[in-house]
Length: 348
Image 1: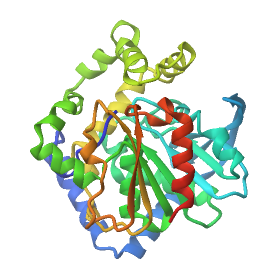
Image 2: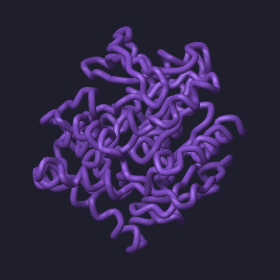
Image 3: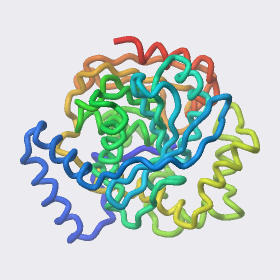
């Protein structure tokens, strides 16, 4: 439902915070790509702890194992399934979802022999919800993903699948840490340059993205989402998808936001994305790995014209359409989506 506004450079941070960030950014920019990658990996691995099992459950016929990793003080909850020696598929969710949004893909990918990891992004569901917008910076979010890939990838790059904010994170990963991915599949998540240009010049997309601007306000968005026992979240679950979620699905989403900090934490990702915390000297770097965009239409939040990545920035891209779906094609048309996903993971 939500994406970032990286190049717009609006900021709600103080001048002191902005100066501090720019200094750190200058230091990062001074590193060549290989040294920068090593620095990020060292910073992550220095605070790494082995995964902790957290129980099992069966979802849509697939047995999932819950676990958690720690990136310093940040707990990253994840579910795992499939063949442990298989090729790693890392699945990144968006707002207002959590790992459960991939429930219709777990068994399918497991049966194909993949090793599937679906985390809760920091700020969501069972992962840590640190206070402060800086904790949801581009570098912080990428460090969580790098930790998962380095641990579960057995020294190999991962197949990364991202939807919505998870797609935005996957685009950023492919620019900043390209050696960690072998292929990228993004679902209803435009290339950041395409989205930025549209938000600057296309009033239709500005109107569809009204909530991103609204989420920049302090306190009010939190109150709005929590009002009447999370009525907004219920409405999204019942009306945002072409195929409405069942009551069990809705209840799981409500439970994911039952932590008093959950709404504030998830909205801080929008606030970080609206500020310099998602700036990077590597934004706009040409992406050379194979990229597939799977796009459900009609999408209430994003214009279909945003689906095609800019050719000058993504050299190997294709777009696969899921008609009569929505912003969540993996939920609305799971059989067709799974077929396209399999094609995307295999094709170069």
